[in-house]
Amino acid sequence: MNTELVVPPLAELRLRRSVKWRAFPEDVLPLFVAEMDYELAPPVSEVLHAAVTRGDLGYHAPGPEVGKAFSGFAGRQWGWDVDPARVRPVTDVGVGVVEVLRQLIRHGEPVVISPPIYQPFFDWVPEAGGRVLEVPLRGTRLDLAGLEAAFATHPAAYLLCNPHNPVGRVHTADELAELVRLARLYRVPIISDEIHAPLALPGATFTPLLTVPRAADVAIAVVSASKAFNLAGLKCAALVTAGPAMTRVVDGLFTEVGERTGHLGALATIAAFTDGDAWLATLISTLAARREQLGALLAAELPALGWVPPEATYLAWLDASALGRDEQPRDHFLHEARVALEPGPRFGAPGSGFVRLNYATSPEILTEAVRRMSAAVSR
Ligand SMILES: Cc1ncc(COP(=O)(O)O)c(C=O)c1O
Image (tube, rainbow, N blue to C red; front, side, top):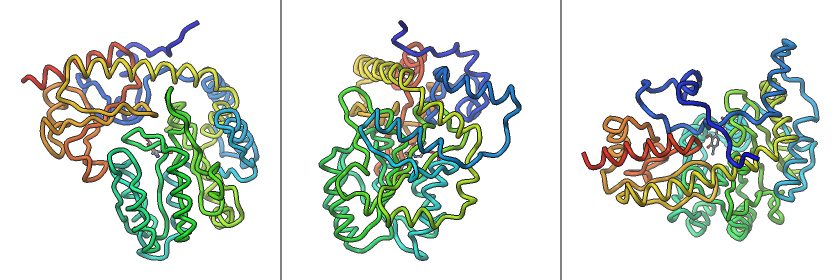
C-alpha cells in the first residue's frame, strides 16, 4: 500500500488555475498560499465528477447532511460529540467569522487577536465594524496573562486560531481551559477558527474548543474540510455551537448567509467528512514525512534559518531574520531563488524577518526549493 500521497508532475501542476499556480511566472516554485499539491481524496473527486456529469451545479440545498457528516467526523477524530442540528453551513470560514462578528460587535468595539496570525484576521474585524486589539503570542504560545488584561477591557470577542496559522501550534487542553475561564469571567465570546484541526500531525493532540468544560456558554467554532482536503475554491464551511446563548447568536444570522454555501463545496464536504478518514490518515503521514525532510534539509543547507517544527498544518514558520528584516528575506528568496514564500509581516509585526513555507508538495519540489534558497543565501 502507498504510504504517501501522489503529487502530479510539475508540468501538470502548472496547468492548475488556482492562485498558487497563477500568481507567479513559470520559473518560480510557489510555496506560499495554503493549497496542497496532492491529488484529491477519491471519495471527494468521485462525488464531484458525478455532480458535473449530471449537470448538478445548482444552488446548495439546505439540509442536515453537512451537520451529520461533520458530527460523525468529529466523533471519530476527536471524540467530540457534536449535535448535527447545531452545525450551520456557511460560504467559507471568512464569511462565517465576519457574519458572527457582525452580531457581536457594536460599532467600533475591539476584537482581540494573537499575532503573528493568519493575515485576513486583521481585515475580517474591520469588515465586521470592529477594530483589532493585538495580544501577540509569546513565542508560539498564547499569552494568557496578556489576554486577561485585554479581556478585562471588555472587547466584543476573541478570535482564536487553533491550530495556529502560521506558527503551527496546537493549543493544549490546559491552555484552552484557562482561556475559557477568562472568557467566562470577563464575558468575552470566543470565535474559534478550527480550519486546520484535521491537520494535527503525529505527536500533537488537537482539542476542539467546544470540548473544554463550559466552553459552550462562550464559544462558537468555525470548521471546514477545505484545508485538509484542498477544497478552498468550493466554498463550504460551518459554524458549530453547543449551548443556547451562542446558538442564539448564530440563529441571528440572515438565512441568506447559509444559502450562499457552495453546492459543490457542500457535496465535497459531506464526502470528505463521511468517507475521507483513510485518505486523511495517508495525508498526515505524508505531511509528517515532509516535515521531517524539511528539518533535515534546513539543518544541512540553510542553518541560518530558525524554526520550531509545526505541530499541525503544512506551513513552516521560518525565522530568516539573520538575512534581513521586514519582507527582505521573502523578497530575496523570490528574486534570487525563484521560490515564492509568504512574507512574515503579512501575519503582523512579530512576523518581521520571517517567511512561511508551504511543504504540502513532493519530496523533489521541496528539495529543489531548499537547494535554490540555500544557493541564494550564499549569493
Ligand atoms: C486559519 C485560517 N482560517 C481561514 C482560512 C481560509 O478559510 P476560508 O477559505 O474558508 O475562508 C485559512 C486559509 O488558509 C486559514 O489558514
